[in-house]
Length: 136
Image 1 (spheres, rainbow, N blue to C red):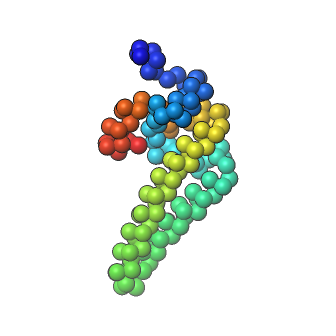
Image 2 (cartoon, one colour):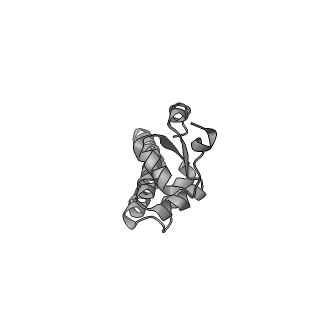
Image 3 (cartoon, rainbow, N blue to C red):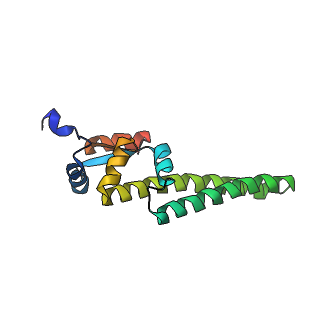
């Protein structure tokens, strides 16, 4: 395999999708950008509304932990705070999965996501290193 075959060009969407389905490549997902894209109107409504529900739910849990702390129920406050943080992190991972799932269904959306650098295709042998380092 030459070096030119390892480079995936953004305009070659069918090759990227085919190689991903065959397991030759994997995607690095930028969580910050994926959250912004999932919150935008470019995503289907069911993804966007589910994401927004869990964002607001985790926010209310975090705010509720502060309110409960004023009533001196410190045990409940700590529990609500930890639960709010866990839900927020899980929601971020879910946003990444929704982004990847929807981008594999729609070619135009995949082009948008690749241009915004929310998804970066990498060779499969490097994905293990990326997972260990926390990039995926």
